[in-house]
Amino acid sequence: MKTVNDFNFAGKKALIRVDFNVPLNENFEITDDTRMQAALPTINKVLNDGGSVILMSHLGRPKSGPEEKFSLKHITNHLKDLLHTEVLFSGDCIGSEAKDKSNALLAGEVLLLENLRFYPQEKAGDKTFAKALAELGDVYVNDAFGTAHRAHASTAIIADEFGAEKCFGFVMAGEIKNVQKVLDSGKSPVLAILGGAKVSSKITIIRQLIDKVDQIMIGGGMSYTFAKAAGGKIGSSMVEDDYLDLAREIMEEAEKKGVDLLIPQDSTNADAFKPDANTGVSGIGEIPDGWMGLDIGPNTMKAFADAIRNAKTILWNGPMGVFEMDAFAKGTKAIADAIAEATENGTFSLVGGGDSVAAVKKFGYQDKVSYVSTGGGAMLEYLEGKTLPGIAAILK
Image 1: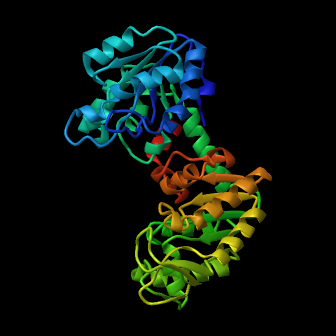
Image 2: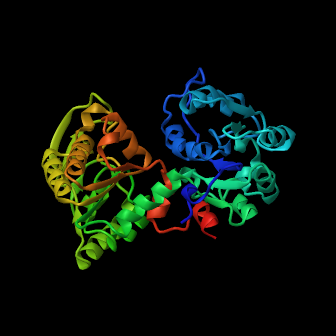
Image 3: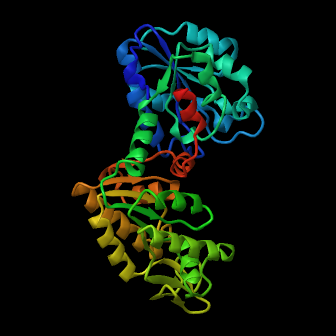
């Protein structure tokens, strides 16, 4: 796996695909710059070598051409502050302006291109568009793991234009290395914690992980499908009735392969889906009619925390309940607490997926786990064993 460490960028222009798809408020101010911070080591490696940097990214979901609210010019000043250097901006990502500004770049200078998705050719994986982008740089660096599962022009198609002059940035390399650490070389016992709303969205991951881990912990809305599949009563909790047979198959498969499938014992329930609803606790298969499970119960919190503290490698994807409401955040916080404690004691912990990352940030634990994936959908597809176009294009 070639990374930026395998190149000396002195006198070269690095065309870096970054993921600067950051949230902006109504005043175009960045509300979370995590993705920008993550790209800094790759950018600084090129600059420190004596090279110049051309950055390309998407922002938001423009529908038909340029939209002011999705212009990357809004992040230029913040990028200057992060890099402690001037950042030039091109009002187009291809064409004469982009070409002239990239040609004029001197060693140590940075150019940010306008939003790639102002062109439909980007998402379409258009070769002509990819070629126009490729003309701007000498070496292609993909550091946008969050888009690695898309065969877009700037993430996959463009790599063919660079021959051997292409590599991964530190974000991409780190994501691949850390996911592989869980899947292939994690110290035993390896524990996968899977939460979230639906079994259907996690089926492929569960099946993939059954052959890779020692324990799988199930929480969140999908735990009620497993509880019903085991013959329990779940009131008006979320359930996917079409997946009951599949849930039973997974339970049987786990038992056959010696994988400990941990299902919640009890549930924190509410009589309505709202923050100030009446609450109560019951066995997960004994939820009264008219009540819905919105979090794991206290006995489960303790049992899950004990399992986490005994694990040596942990993957966490998905919350234990509706953590956005404080009344139903205790289970997710208990998991985060236990993972932080285990990590402090030497366990390797990888947190990935939008809601899990949001939960870790909510409780202030970003720095108390081993690695927080910025990948979202890309990480999930990688865990499912799928080939990601953005990775495959560099490995060719």
